[in-house]
Length: 435
Image (cartoon, rainbow, N blue to C red):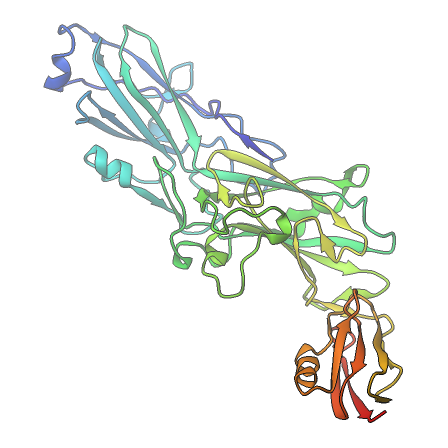
C-alpha cells in the first residue's frame, strides 16, 4: 500500500525576480513591478520517524530558476539557509516580478551546491547524484515546479515541492507463527537503490552500475521496533528511503507474489528494488548459524507485476510469517543461514534390492524426515530404464514414490535423494526375471 505524500511546508521560501525578458514584455502592457511571495510548500510525509531517519522537512539550500513564456532563463538564484529572510511565513528571499507577465518557476532543494544549468533543457536533463544511500546531511533532494503562471499584484505564489525519495515503512505481524518459533529481526536493507535521479522527470536505474551495492539499511536499535509488539502480535514500524526507481513490468503480467522474482543471472534482479530482512530464528527444528539468519526478500511495487517505486510516495508493508516461519506471504525465504537440530532419516521401502517378474507392479517409496527437505526422485534414471524396456513407471502425487510396471528381463537402477538437512541418497537395484 502506498500513500502519495503531497508535501506541506517545511519552510516558505520567498522569491522575487527581475523580469527583464523582452518576449514577456509583449504579453502585457509594461506595468510597475509587483512584489510577490513565492512560497515553496513541502508536505507531511512524516510517519513513525525515528532518530536514525533523515529529516524529511529539512531545507538547507535552494536553487531557483525563473523562465519567461518563451522558455528563456531570466533569473537563477542559489540560497543557503543562512541567506533566507524571515518573512513571518517562513524563510525567503525578495525579488521583483513584472505584473501580468507569465513565468515558469523551477526549484531544486538540498542539492548542496549551485546547479550549473543555464537553460531549460539542461535543467530538465539534470541528474542529482548521491554519494551514499543514507547521505541526507543536506536534507532530502526535492524539486518543485509552477508552470505558466501569470503574476498578479502582490500575491503569494505557491510552488509545491516533491521529495524525490520514496519512503518504505515495514512492520511484522507474528500472529500466524507457531508458538515454538522465535523470530527477531537483526537487519533490514532495501537493495536496488539508485545512485541518482532526474529531478524533473521519470527516473530509474538503467544498469547494475546505477544502484548502490548496499542500499539504505537499519540494524540493532534501528530495527528494535520490529521486535516489540504494539497491537496484539503486530510490531512497531520502521522506515527506509530510496530514490525513485521506475522499472515497469519486466516480467510481464504475473498473478501472484510467489512469481515475483528473477531467475539467477537475470540483469533485472539487481536493477529492481527489493527489501531484504534478516532475522535471528529459533524453533524446535532450526536455529540461526552464528552471524547468519533467516532471510526474507520481497520486490517492491504496487502489484505482483509492478516494479515501480515512485518518488514522494509512502509504501506500507506488513510481513506475515506463517507456521514455522520458513514460508512467507509473497516473500522469498532463504534458509541457508539456519542449522537443523531435529531428527533426520531416510529409508526406502520395500528395500534397496527389488526382484520381480515381467508383469509385476511394485511400489517403491522413500520416507524421510524432515518432510520439507527437497527431494529428487531420479527422473533421468527412470526414463533411461523405460527407454531400455525394463519397466514403465508412474510417480506418486506427492513425488516421493513410484509404481514400476515390469516390462522386460534385465536389471535397472533407481536413484532417490533427499536434500538439506537430510543430505542422503539411495540407489535401488531392480532385477526383472522372465515369468
